Length: 112
Length: 120
Image 1: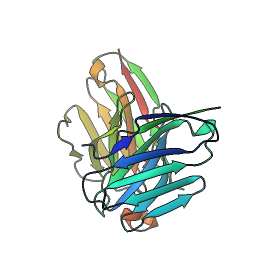
Image 2: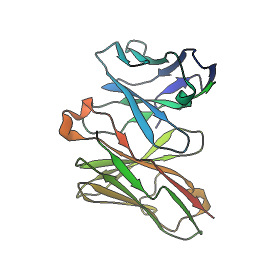
Image 3: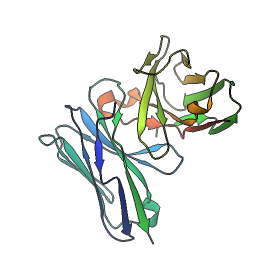
């Protein structure tokens, strides 16, 4: 079953602008992860944030986690046309080797 | 980094054909692999959890006799879509974690590039 709900479902911005995507989930989690998927390809892991962390950075990516609101956001700064892809949040509800539960995703289009 | 290889990347076949999809962990051992299905412009839905040396665990609504999973070694899991029909056309993706890098809970899943299955 799907847990996360991404917002917005689709986002179109100009190159150089920042893109913010939000994710909400329903149950308690061990960690939350963001993935990127180019059309017709597999998923690429971007960032993992643990339940006891509030913010994490990786290059132009910034992820926040608010466990009290059961929500997370992914910020991509200074976007590029190559950032065009679908972005999914996924929650890891348990501490073992268990499957992820994916949100519906945000389709980001960055226009050059 | 950990790599998961999936083969084939694209299959077109006639209705009634059985299709086997392979998922390999190239540089780590994976006692557990996950199989997902994705319809166009939708998210990933977990189909089953593949366990090395034991039976797979299927999600509710997934027919185990339709989607046969074999995890015969620590680096290979296969998904066979038996007697495939047009409604089985979809994008199938596998994933696994590298437990050799520490706690599973701190590790991301590594995904194959997916298999696009088209049944005519």
